[in-house]
Image (cartoon, rainbow, N blue to C red; front, top):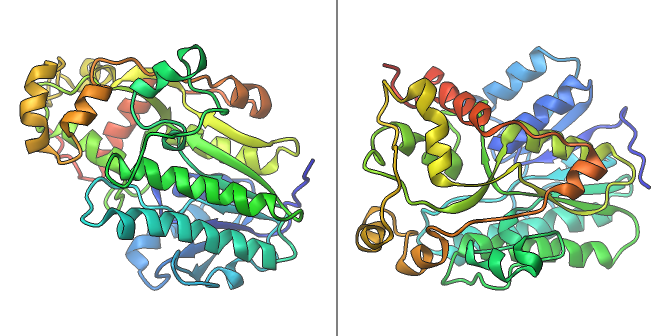
Amino acid sequence: MTQIDKSKPVLVTGATGYVAGWLVKRLLDEGLTVHAAVRDPENKKKIAHLDDLAANSKGQIKYFKADLLDQGSYAEAMEGCELVYHTASPFTTNYKNPKKELIDPAVKGTANVLEQANKTKSVKRVVVTSSCAAIYTDATDTRKAPGGILTEDVWNTTASLDHQPYSYSKTLAEQKAWEINKAQEQWDLVTINPSLVMGPALNAQSATSESMSLLKQLGDGTMKAGVPNLGMGLVDVRDVADAHLAAGFTPAAQGRYITSAHNTNFLELAKALLPKYGSKYPIPKKALPKWLLTIVGPLINKSITRQFIKKNVNISWKADNSKIKKDLGIKFRPIQETMEDAFEAMLEQGVIRRK
């Protein structure tokens, strides 16, 4: 049982990120002091939304320059913190060298932050933002899971440098976190494992999240002919922030937490936008046939390989979210609220042109 003193600062790595922004907001609203570790504290455009959050809250924010691959760069930011949130990790399908752009920052970055926790005597708990990608690679993996449903006991064994390297990076990074945790007794580790995160970005202009690019494609006509009917999980970014908050401050929190609200598919996400936005925007209304995707998929996006199509299209995805509901009391938003709020935020911030 780990009790965190709320008068002490809390470290958030990758503080300008999509999930991290909402987590910082939650912490500031609780009146906490946030140590925000970012690559470039001088880039005022990148941190403007965080400054705004601090100005309208009871809490305080302090910025620290740190980089995942710069050994020891988190030392100053971690000083005096009992609780560390490690959210920083690359999420992209647009890469040339997966080892350099995905694996190294994820694994070496996790080791860098957690080894710093070993050297910082104040640290009592580390919460790592992992992913359901550390549990599975393709929707077909859910069929092989015990009872056909993913749980916290399942680990991803099918990703590799050549197949879904993003999933591979999340798996290796989380395994590294548990390895470092088990070799010491000073701090405990909790991991949050979200499925696809959607919902409003606090800073959509600079949001590099893959979720934002998928959402944009649903509204800008890229997918108006239809979407790949991919089985997947969905969770609201605000619920993921709540999960992090609860994981940090619930004394009995332990282990991994699948953070996924809905067992769904990509077509259902598109359909959730139709009632409010379907008349004005080219929101897709149907799924593309699998045979057509096999031909055009690899041409549209290099991550939509024939192997990916075979293992994910028209296959249902199932995960058990009962642990996080029971242990941390998390209640999840409905799909329609998540999708509509996310789309509205993109319109407000000019990422999709309002009509």
